[in-house]
Image (cartoon, rainbow, N blue to C red; front, side, top):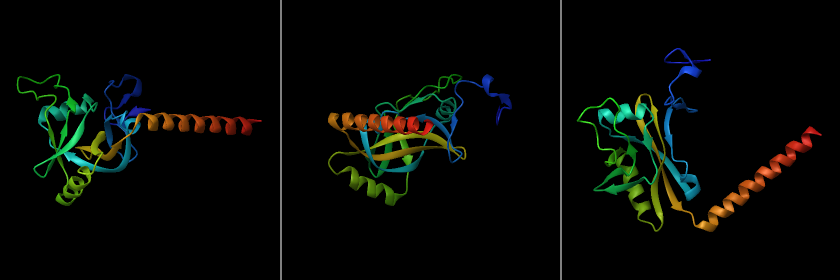
Amino acid sequence: MYYASRHLPLSSTPFYVMIIGAMGEKIVVFNRKARHNYEIIESFEAGMVLQGTEVKSLREGRMSLKDSYATVDNGEIFLVNAHISPYSHGNIQNHDPLRGRKLLLHKAEIKRLTGKTEEKGLTMIPLKVYFSRGRAKVELALARGKKEYDKREAIKRRDADREIERELKHRQHQ
């Protein structure tokens, strides 16, 4: 099997090759802890305003969403604490890795999200960052933080489902 854009065998492709999602988007990074730490209420897509070296660094897959969130400031939404590593071949005009990045949404969506985030316990967190048709996008989620006992309950439920699935598979093979 060959990697589409480079015509190289998969074994020789660089480690930073992005995953291609179901809709043809190239996924840069997932927020793995988001679904564990938060109850996802609603998710939506937003564009990102980036500098040139940030785009190049994203294409190398050098981003972390750990402890990042989105906030509303003067009718605009910003992604805070998202770390994009400086571009490896950049010069003195490389970007600040932790700067706030403006997110692009329709004004009606921003107003609705502003109202929802003012509710007690709701926040906006990034689930993943990806490229869609060459544009950097972020999937944001409106979420409520889980308590510790909710996390334990979810783990128990997941383990029970795995056990049931294992039993069903075992019974089918006999």
